[in-house]
Length: 102
Image (cartoon, rainbow, N blue to C red; front, side, top):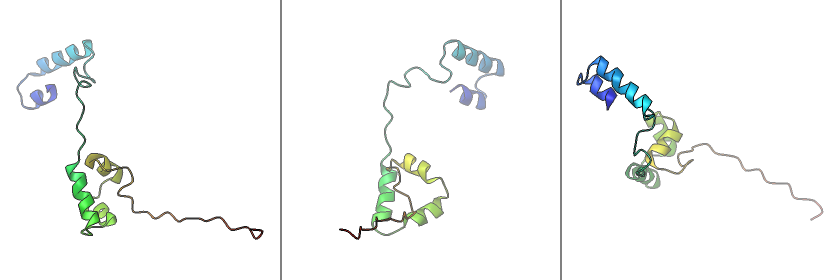
């Protein structure tokens, strides 16, 4: 709020500096009071939309990757998708050779 107040010219430069000094003294500059008191809601609507696109054949995972042009791990995290959901790489399977004695 201090940054935004400064950007909107609601507070002066000296007020801005004073508020940051006070926050540092109270050790709330990086972690504000009540930050850990409330659980952050997990996103699900956007993730469900991406699942529907893939499940109904509207877009493939690689098309989603190309169109978004973002890090897929970030997209999965922001959309509440399980890690690896948007992976498009195929991992070859290696089978053990059967013994001739069996």
